[in-house]
Amino acid sequence: TTTPISFVADVLFPYARANARAHLAATYHTQQTREDVALLRAQINKDLAEGVPGVVPLPPSNATDQDKVIDALVANVQAMIDADRKLTALKQLQGRVWRRGFESGEMKGEVYDDVVQALAEWDTKGIKSYIYSSGSREAQRLIFGNTADHGDLRRYLSAFFDTNVGGKKESRSYYEIWQTLGVDSPSQILFLTDVYQEATAARDAGLEVLISIRPGNAPLPEDHGFQTITSFAQISI
Ligand SMILES: CSCCC(=O)C(=O)COP(=O)(O)O
Image (cartoon, rainbow, N blue to C red; front, top):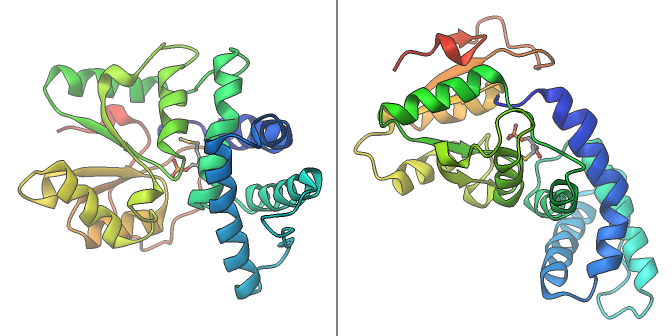
């Protein structure tokens, strides 16, 4: 919605795919990575129980052969990335891996110019903007905090929400966000998305919704019934 899909698919995901092993090996014994691995293990066990194709069982958590555990973790993480699964465990790890890329300057965030202009305008008008992404809050801060063309955009953003609040295709998540934001009515929140199922979930929770059409989006159902935009410049609040 805010960022070219090509940046996510051709830069972010391949970077995570290529660097997951190095990250896990370098940080394996840290508390943070232990927690990340525990979350991944729980997801992998759930996937195995549900018969998700391509899942590789992990050696037990007390296994002494670190390399074997990392091999299995990487195989699962790569399969999850290839299937574009929006899993909290995957997204948390991706954020950790991207940190190195952003801190070294190897990667810079990409945000559409019209999005930056809209964020700046809304900020001037006292309208607050928030991000809700399947990407982790850490990943969001990295991307919006280190853009190639506009520097640090976090000055325009009042908070970040990720899938710890629930999945983006679940109505309950939008109810939780409304409750957190503290406005009287969910209709005081405008949710912008490029994904039809997210639009439906947000609308069911009472939010106002616009669907943003950008290159590379999945096609919308013919009778989707939502107002659409092709640029944030078309939004009037
Ligand atoms: C903002 S983190 C990178 C994007 C990402 O990992 C992703 O899955 C995109 O999810 P979104 O809900 O922002 O479309």
